[in-house]
Length: 212
Image (cartoon, rainbow, N blue to C red; front, side, top):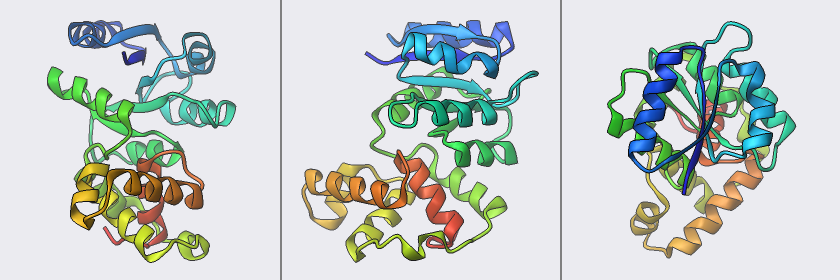
């Protein structure tokens, strides 16, 4: 069962998220009011996913995500930032900081539940078109992938990941087994030095390997 830590300075938003998640059978492990409390809460509660408000008064979601991943680089929870505007530069910064996706505050309850489940599974990209638009607006190509040593097949898999395809969908597209695709995805993540497919896609756009 997926467990979630809610991080938001607005009590009403926390209550609303708690009710939506609980109604869908998702465990709310706990709540905190500010990004400055995230690291200790994550250590204590060990949630699978953190719903993180991107703007908070003392420590925002971007800095909180950076601190969390610096403290627990191997086994940190997946971070799903919650924002008012999809095209906000803060969202792109949060993705670069290590967030696995983002969610709009005006999202419908079923969208919130599905976003948590997608991020928890980690086998497909959340809102690929929106990430592409953010990259088009804010990414500055830096050639970072030039020395990554991706094989032709791994590069093909990365491009399909950026299109939002799941492992099963990539396997069908390339006429390969799902386990083979999982191996390719793992190799891509390892060579890029990232922990999930969202980060791999952000790096692919930022490097200019894939043009948004």
